[in-house]
Each structure stands twice: as structure tokens, then as C-alpha cells.
Length: 332
Image (tube, rainbow, N blue to C red):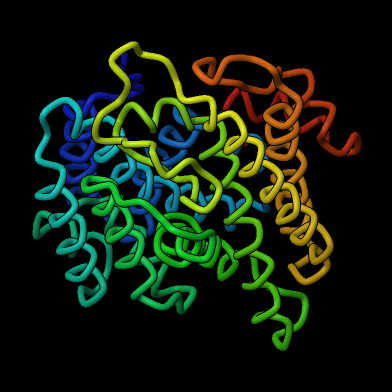
């Protein structure tokens, strides 16, 4: 199985070293933060066309915070999905991310954090956490979910999958974003978190359904055993290289559940601040298209499905089309 690599681990480490130097030399924390923001924009732009596109509909201050969040979760995700397969000691790198995060939370300012050698992406994310009063344990839960990918486990039921894995890998990220997006009324915040949970579960289930075959050959099984033939053994993929037929029905099951979660999230868009609502709605629309393709596709599980650009464009609100060319020329 070929490993797709957008940036190598050395690319990441070089960017961290460059950012450490730039932030230390900055005249203020604001200037230092701008250096990290610029590189975080590049991370999002390089790794996710779809999420990059939908976040362009956020106002500038929120958009920049979302980019910092994305950079802080992208590297750990790459560690377990890509670099661990290339021989990297992902456990040690994840531990370093956690130590840097804990230290940054108690350090005053970004320049002070990078001056003691902390990862600028993690340190800047810690500033977002402090600014928005995000519960500090959420990032710990995220890193723990990443560690679990290094020692894959099976999940008996959908509840086990959602509570035992998706919570850390996706739900807490939705919570990060909700703290940045905000709500129209303070009393709606708990309901907005519930909406974010539905959307996070939907997005993760869509990813599971799309990557079911690749994950299977990596020894990972993200479909609950209750919907699978219990004879599947991820530790010993079939010698003939054929994908078990039951995974095709499992893909559909995952995508159907995801569709229900997208619908639930869509019905609660009104909870978010007006200036964030379009971005959340666009996220639901664009990723629902991929989920629908998974439901309708008769293609082999070994083909990684994607949504054509023109369909993504059509899912965006026409009144906002003018933002698209600006997004991809780097102006927003």
C-alpha cells in the first residue's frame, strides 16, 4: 500500500525550526503569532481542499484561529497515519506535542513559549485555548485517540466506536471550533456543542467509509463488530489480497449513519453566531456530497472516492461565490 505524503516529517520539522527562529526574533507576540498563522494557513491549504474552502466563509479573526487549530491536529494525525508507517517513533513525537502543550498553557505569550523550544504550532494553539476558555483536557483526549491508532482496537458497538474513539479523534475538535464560532445566545452554547458533536461524528464516519479498505490493510477496523462478520481478522489480511465482501455493506452502514448525523447537525445551524453559520452549513453540504457518493457508488472499495470540484462549488451559497477565486489565489 502506497503512503501518500503531502509533507514529509522532515518538512514539518524544518517548518517548526524556521517558525521558532522567526517568532523568537519578533518584536511582539502579535507579530510572532502572525508568522505562525501564515504557516498554519499553508498547512490547511496543502492538506484539505474541502475544509480550506468552507473556512473561507468565516470572518478573518475566527478563520485564523481555525487554521491554528487545524495545524495543531494535523501533525499528530500525520504522525500516526503516515510517518509511523515510515519508521518514525510516533509515540515519542505525540508525547512531545503533549509536553509542549502543557508547558505552553502555563507560559506567558507565544514568544516566551518558542524561546524555550516549544513547537510554535502547539504553542499558538495553546493561545487559542486560553483566549476562548477551551477546556484544556480536550487536546489531551485528541492525542490519546491518536495514540490508540498506533495500537488499533476493535469496537463491539457503534456506541463503543463513538465514545471510545470518535470522541477523541473528532468530537473534541468540533468542540474547539464551537468555542471559536460562538453562539447567538450564551444559553445556546450547550446545544451548539451537541450540534458540533453530531457533525464531528458524521465527518468521521464519512472518512471511515471512504478509507475502509486502506484502514483494513493497515490493521484498523472502524466499523463496529455488530455490523461485521466476526471472522474478519485485521491482523491477518487475506493472502489473496481480496477485500472481504462484508466491508461493502459496512461502508453503506457507516455512510447511512453519517447521513443521519449530517441531518441532525443541519437542523441546528441557527444556534451558531451569524458570522459562522455559513461556514458550518457549507461544511455540511460539501461533506454530505462525499457521503452521498459513498452511498451511491458501486465502485471497488479500493478506489478512494472524492467529490469533483464543480460539485463542491455548486454546494456553496451563490451569494458567496466571489470568495472562491480569492481563496485560491491566497487573498483570504
